[in-house]
Amino acid sequence: MRICLLGALMAASALAHAEVQTREIPYTAADGTKMVGYYAYDDAVEGKRPGVVVVHEWWGLNDYAKRRARDLAELGYSALAIDMYGEGKNTEHPKDAMSFMQAALKDADAAKARFNAGMDLLREQQQTDADKLAAVGYCFGGKVVLDMARQGVPLDGVVSFHGALATQTRAVPGSVKARVLVEHGSADSMVSSDDVAALSAEMVKAGADFQLVNLPGAKHGFTNPDADRFQEKGVDVAYDKAADEQSWSDMQRFLGETFGQGN
Image (cartoon, rainbow, N blue to C red):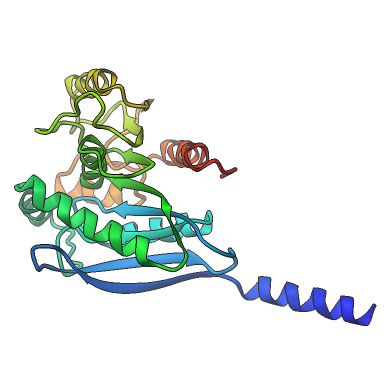
């Protein structure tokens, strides 16, 4: 009886000390650019678990992107917030953000290579089940993960939150291997209704497993609690608690279905 009690106390102590572990990991893109990844996992989860790449907003690899990696780790995933700009740079100035974003997207092959470098880094982590990978992206990152799906990057699923939908590289029949979930705000002034219609038509034509959720009244940036203060900088974004919570719940369901789990 005493041994059983001791075992129970030890297990409870281990559980009490289990928590999300994080670390920054330097890596290098194919073009030689120095990148910084932010890795998170829950050490209470035993063995390997699905990996999720997180792609930041146009602001760069900031605290919000890192927070989302931790949130995913708390759900039991191996999560890596990757760096699409280089050296982990980020900003709160819209002009700088636009410049960073345009530079990152001007060469589609280079953007894909940067994403793949981050995905490969996630695969290498000992907690990651390399056969089960997804990607989620916000704003600029939402476009990135959609473009990766369009180009047939080997992912099981991608989720775009208030992402840009237009692209110069459209999916073709059979090119989209990943399941696709798009969480879009109906009041997003940065994405036109034509863009929404074009994406839906594109995905149907490509034969993709595609879902689009239109969140009523939500503006661009609806998942980010910091969005409201960026309004002062002339950016039409706003946090929407209801849309944030619904889209996160939708993502959990989607990833759970994608990986055959109960998340």
